[in-house]
Amino acid sequence: MSKGAVRRLIIEGSEIEYKLIRKRIRNIYFSVKGGGKVLVSAPASVPICYVEKALMNRWPNIRKALDSQSNIPPLWILSEQQKSVCVYGKVRQVHVVKSSNGISLDNESMTVFCKDENDLKSIKKVYTEKIKENFKNVVLKFCERTYATFGDRIEKFPTIKFREMTSRWGSCKKSDCVITIAYGLAIAPSECIEYVIAHEFAHLISPDHSPRFYAVLDSVMPDHRSRRKNLKKYKLLKSDS
Image 1 (cartoon, rainbow, N blue to C red):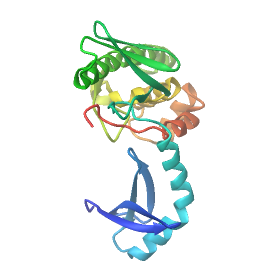
Image 2: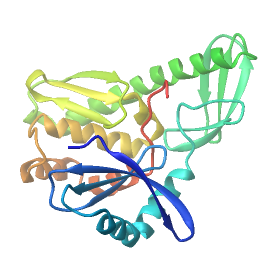
Image 3: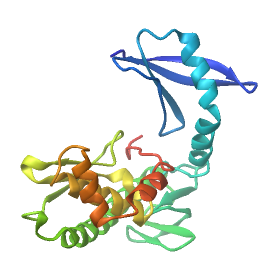
Image 4: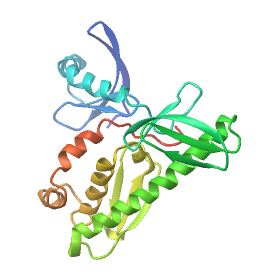
């Protein structure tokens, strides 16, 4: 598999940038990653002209995915120019108040309480630490509820870990009974967070994506496909991005 090359193509009068990765596969695949990055995976033997023709044919769908991302601000990026963030699926205006470090969330805004309300670095540090702390509590509550839903199909409650990830919302190591959740999942609404947790719990029963795995997931979350589709609107970023 190649590391990939960034290429440019004119579509509908605009220059489009995409990353082409050659793989040992039979078909051409397209995806939109965090930050509006277009990724194209193609067989090594397919000429570039065919790849770009396929990209142009799929462009309406790719553009929709890009548009849905562009309307949602990131979770972690906070600056003088970027004063709104998306937390738990809601876009919130950020307000800073001088006080003991903490955060407060409501439907339309988020207040960051910081001892040094004029120092952006301090504000970002408080914001990041408190969001992670809040997110951990949310996830652990969902995990307890999900564990009860699975019943005796899972022998014991798994160890829940958290880490920075850029390619997966969550992961499961069945052999150690460990589930790891990406901090960046805090950008998504509760139904999407619940989906990721149920998905990883299902891997404690079936480690692959076999028919058995989906049968398990169907039994505990019949609407998991619509939740997964909704999750694709959000960007997964590390807090230090």
